[in-house]
Length: 168
Image (cartoon, rainbow, N blue to C red; front, side, top):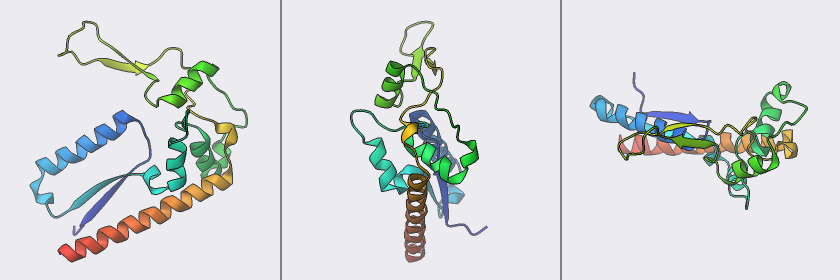
């Protein structure tokens, strides 16, 4: 069809989501050599926004799922979907989820052996899953981050187009 570049935007984080999508893209490229002239990119939307990346780096607790950034984006994009009342897990549970984005998962094996793949599920004590500070969110922050993502994506597409044309 003439495509030279395919950009897949990943908007849902989580180590398992990133790894699964990356592996799937690599498998497609391996199995379909006819795609050798196509560049496939996986762009995590937060990598397009310096502001958003700064929230991931906050110390000692970070801004992850349903926190200040994601709530701000929803306030900008679809404010009617943002709840007025903030509901959180118990303080210690919330703190652990802000400290380690994968803490919510627990891996279990019926039999302990290196060949057995663990079953991964959410910890029972988690009831809500907010992993940051939604009470700090604002429509203005959402608009700023959205603007950075759009600008970053435009820059990346321009980069791809320039390099695709150069290599012909």
